[in-house]
Length: 276
Ligand SMILES: C[S@@+](CC[C@H](N)C(=O)[O-])C[C@H]1O[C@@H](n2cnc3c(N)ncnc32)[C@H](O)[C@@H]1O
Image (cartoon, rainbow, N blue to C red; front, top):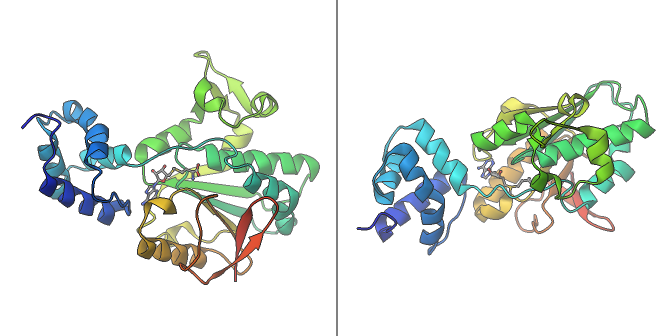
């Protein structure tokens, strides 16, 4: 069997494993996706063909291989200030709801990919504080989480190349919140990074250890999961929020039929959810 071939039984076993591990539903005929994403790992892990790699992942206990496979199978597409409206709403009305809060304002970016989402939130908070000095006397804590250890390393480095900087960042924000590195990339200034911490969290597992939040961004990740898994995740997120806590989903994601713990607030443009 040539290196790239993938038998149906191996595919089905891996597909079920992936859904159990991280919720991602691959569907019936995504052999090409598995092939194109995992073939580059063969050389790195010195494994002769894809079927053997899949069997090692499903049956073995090699944590590094397992993480590399999950990293490769997740879609990490993201950009700065994605869809604009969540960030405009933050600055125009939502941050004001927490003005004067005695404890820290806590915001969670679940499934934060390479960090653009939590850092965009931090930049909005800093811009809001420029107009409203002392608005959050208890400080602001933004937590970014993701299942991918590779993405979390990038988040912590807070360094971005020209391509990622060209996606959604204005020149003014680059000038104000980034510094240029010797290699031409740009790094976020410490006033931004100091507000954000990162942790590995699989949304299929418990997040009780994260504590409670005033706002949650869970954007462009539920789309990969089954309705049952979406419902479980929304139930857990609801438990992290107080009444009137705020939740943003992705622009193409809906809560319809999945949870009755939230009320939808339509805005112009966009929408968000309030915990009942
Ligand atoms: C498309 S990105 C979305 C990034 C960002 N939220 C945004 O909207 O731009 C999806 C992210 O979900 C993460 N992910 C996938 N399955 C996950 C799981 N079970 N638990 C936590 N994160 C997961 C992936 O690693 C990826 O970084």
